[in-house]
Amino acid sequence: MALSRNISVNEASRPKLPRHARLKFDETRQVWVILAPERVLAPDEIAVEVLQLCDGVRSVADMVDQLAAKYAAPREAILTDVIAMLQDLADKGFLTEAREKTS
Image (tube, rainbow, N blue to C red):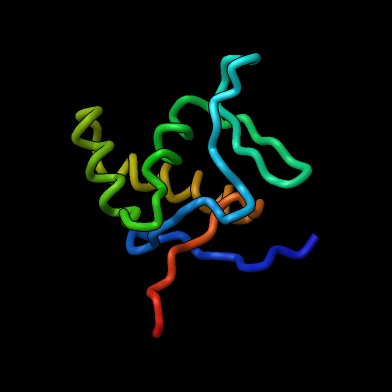
């Protein structure tokens, strides 16, 4: 299956879920899932926290700063993990990037 738009995640990226996917809490299974056409992904607790920050407004750098402050963890370690996780989701078609509006 060809992905419509592969993104390369870096600190300046402003990732968000694509229009066809949404993050939702599954009451039955008591887990967070990403719902997309014909696909369901159950991210772990840390991934859910990062995904909740993926609003297309915050940059990866902003998200990493927020997480580093919240967990009093080294920024570089969080940056490496967040970029790897987001890139994996982007490669699977679960993330896209907010684009500047052109009018």
